Length: 113
Image (cartoon, rainbow, N blue to C red):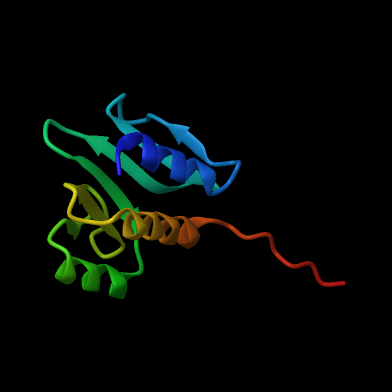
């Protein structure tokens, strides 16, 4: 997946997702319900994604995939950095983005009648 693919998928998750650049033009930030679920940055080598993750799952992913490491500049218990070096398939990347989105997205509360 490339930058445009990640961007398009992230924005497709909800019509009210906010895309912003609070850390400069090289870091894309995606928010839902006012909370960050994806940071996407590029350097001279690879695109990198910071994604929120369930702590147990975060550890499992880091052990299984060398391209998934503790979150760069984030709470390492709850965030992973995904190095987009081509070693991870697009389905896994989309699933990880969706998982991050689900962890922070506020669902409408059910009103009692």
